[in-house]
Length: 330
Length: 259
Image (cartoon, rainbow over all chains, first blue to last red; front, side, top):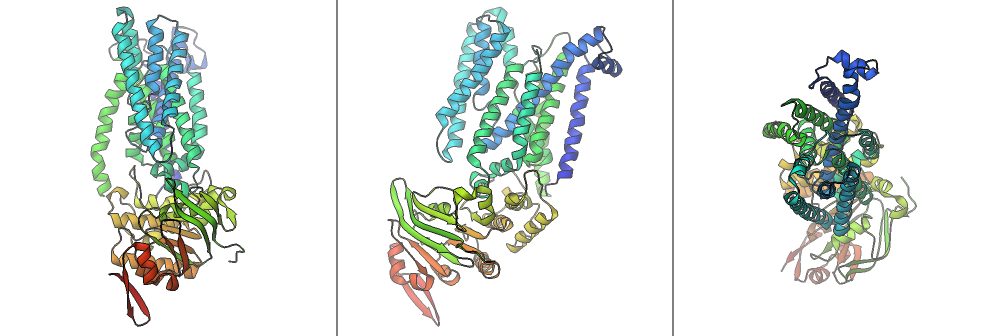
């Protein structure tokens, strides 16, 4: 029985976990601070080194991680509804492939950071338009067509990326690889991503029960009064936008968009009224935690955060999956 | 409850699939408490007609009105209060419990931010009990048998509490006892709650026994509609199915069997 009290309780717990991961990311690092210092730095009372580190380095990076993780998880949950396929993730429709091509091309020609961002965003949008334009059809064929077109466009982008990596000069290769694996260290401002995330939640949450029905089948959703065509267009546009923004800030971070909605689904059920906001919180928490680990595990060297999200996500996911049969047998 | 307009009205309705006119100039009017069976061969446009009557696709020509209003003016939500559809197949891409699945029938009755209330749960539980699924509320839908899944779809439709029920082969997957129970349930709803039923059936004898009226679709644009006792005769049915049928008479009832 879906229950609002239970949902709010779960969201509250997840919000607390998110807060804890934020605090950890502000405290831990090459300059070890205690929470009190961080608090004073946040209030702007500490003008010293600690204040600088917290305000200008760690806080923007943590907020960017929060926003990107949330965006990717939300985009993944929406893609799974759109394609009615539990294996869909934000990258399945080629959006991150397009972004990678744009970003790596900018890197290859040694263009400034601003062009890199513009290139990544333009690439993502181009992939989006191509996939949707080609897959635009009628009826139930659309889902398969959309998926196939996306997979093919993504594969084409992958080939272009491999081509650029193979001809790239040695000194740029490392930056390119880090970008491909996902990297939060280049973050400038987290605010655009946070704003997009809030805007996205405001667009999606009012329709979350409609989306629950859509995930169960278009025909039954339509019979029950869900404006199916409009809603599908909306979630396609939003999921692509979220992915483009997240990829632009943090590179292509794998696994968050696929694993987080599943984690929530396995632990708390399939009701999108809970699944969507919970995915945002879990995605943000996971990415912030992974990024903190990426900074400190073998400091001063930094690891690509995308590797850590996978290393953290996979065991948790497998554990939840393996205990699933027992639950449904009860 | 009195209504000026009939529950469902169609006029000049054409059903065209892939360039072929399956139904031409259909005129239909269904009042409260009425039951109409649609019979025809495979591919004769029964499901497409039912979806058109449900407002899920525009007619190739002609008009459909639900309680005196075209679907475009009603809007999807208002339409969902008035008519429900049992689809031919059910899809479950994601796991969900039986109770949750029945509860989606409450969607049109809930506000944008509402969650299902205890009253909604009671309606869903009653619907599950009515189709013999009491006790299975917490089961995952993906573990149900074909017949159980079909009965769950019927329970979801009952939970929706529409006025007009459009059923696409409701007896598919059901064993004999549940087939009769399903049709008894429909007859009870038509009698006690003034609900209207349009039912696609393949069993001529059940159509004759349970539906007051019958619509025969010949698949080439022609159709016949009228009281079951008149329309359902050996001559019409033999033409409809392209196979000779014979009539067996037992007291007041007659039965059709394939020759």
